[in-house]
Image (cartoon, rainbow, N blue to C red):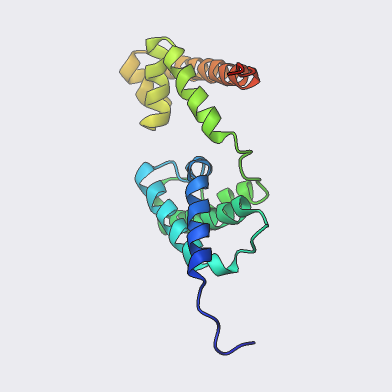
Length: 181
């Protein structure tokens, strides 16, 4: 082992940072499934970026960059959850088991996110409001029921239907063949 390691390659670090920027939307989507708090998610992404930059020389170019970054991000997310275990999220051990063999998204995350926004916009107003309360504002079924004057069981059924509508809408859009220029 060399007692005097060579200094990091600034050009490689810059390439790695540029590749990271290209993956940030996919990474954000993946990490959101683990850390559904926007502020904490931003912190985890920043920590991931710093670690990726610091370890740039360890990345073997030509291998799966996305998998490498997502592994680092997953570890940072789990570390964040361990530090804040008392806040009521799934235990980090459970999340670790769930995501252990999970592959990075297929590269269509940005496309799916855009389609999701379009599909949500097409929902009736009460459906959009219910989706927003549940997934943007992280309200419980009981809280949504109180706001919208429904029973929690009805909210559960409606959310299930709305998710199904959104899933079908996104799948239809993904199957569409783009028009030639």
